[in-house]
Length: 479
Image (cartoon, rainbow, N blue to C red; front, side):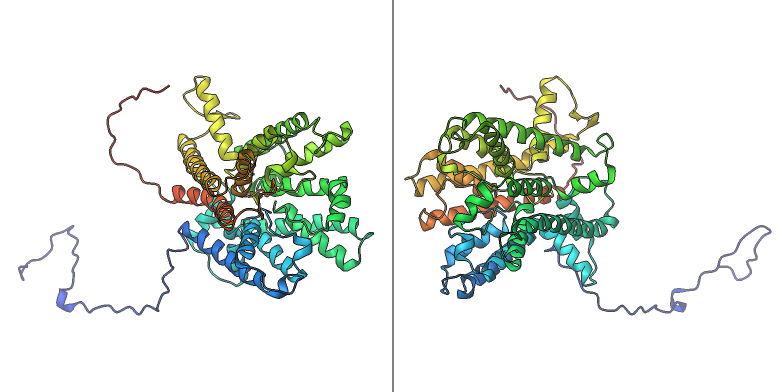
């Protein structure tokens, strides 16, 4: 710059120091712990479920866990632990007779943890110990409890805490109702344990019972009080925590979210159709409800339609039901409960979206709508992506089981593998009586049935890629 230069009137002079005059700026940063990306992966579900299952397996193998005071075989312990964590209810030993109080407590803990959901429970525990919940963890929690992407991430922790408290509160109310029933027939300690166990098992749609064979006949099969308490608990557990929260908050049907409306209506439609079909199919079957009066037939049909959809409690022997009943209930079990609930299956709202899309297409609509709301086409695609791989896996498991254990009727094997994959727990007597390899197939079915739909939902939610270009359209001949 010219040393004789002087600014003219109106000029604004800004002087910058030379580089050699600028001193380096030093910043001291404390060591920062890098958050592992493993938690943000759908594989986390497999890790957590596997850890809990194998931990429970090791505990159930101990002599203290059974009334025989001897070691339980690894396969039998693994079978029971997997059934408990996945809230299925299939067993190889009578839960009330073979397992001790310690063993039953282990099973109960696995039911509670597996039913409540790892994402909600993990977030709740992180909050209790004062740990920070990361954004990726919050995204997974939101996907596990609701499909509403408008839900603010910042409020997820508070919502998760409320969900845990709500779940415990509902199970506590169920405990009180059952305790009032058993307090007159058992000691206080026995009544308390029976009430706790069956309340948790009922709400989490697990299907485990600890009654003796004599008490099952008097307190389950012929006890309307018990069956209706279980009915209410299983319905509340199967409709999903977010639906319950929405119902409590809104209290009127019109302002309810679309998810809540679809879940509630679809649930009652399936219950009505299932009870009507069971009543019709088994009306003259003397091995099930044929010898009952009409009122009892209706009662048992309604109970089987509610519990047989997700929970697995049963007042009749499904091995004695007609083939049509087994086939129909296989489909009902596969549908399962709602997303974010204690129940498994493809999820009723996932299947409902596909049916709504089919109905709208048949009507010639260009858009998928329900209750004056448009459902994004991306959501329909996700529903199809969840259902198709799950059905293909189920089909592969069924073929494998039939191939290695061909001595059973096809309809019984068909029913059993659906019950295992959908984590329901109804049985035709195959479970516990098939070969060791068959037991392994059932174990894999229970595990994959709990993991696959949720893992696929997480995967397609966290991997959204938008193309910067599009290919030309070309039609394909179909139909």
